[in-house]
Image (cartoon, rainbow, N blue to C red; front, side):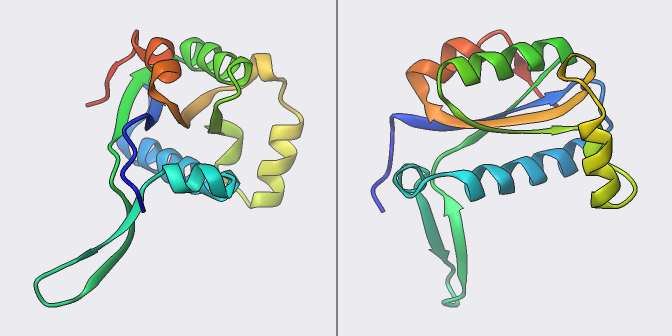
Length: 142
């Protein structure tokens, strides 16, 4: 693994979400992001194993930071369009992906237009020089 200084992770959470829903959305989005990354991009994600004093290994933690920002639903939609236009790897998590069974969530998503979608979170990984201008208007989530 080579430490990467050119790429970064960023998450943008809907500022209206309660903390439990926000954490759930981030977790699902991060898992989906890594699962969908091609091998050459996974290498740039800089995953390493951390070994503690007792020799216990804490596996596959990225050496890169993951910045968590917050924004309004419309801002997240716009960011999603910008990520698509710039060919940046991303995963989003929407309100339709919560509650009931996953089959019902799939149906709810299929029945909801992009215009009516309520975004809980979007997570992206890409080159800093592309991501930074796209995310600079968002504030840190706290």
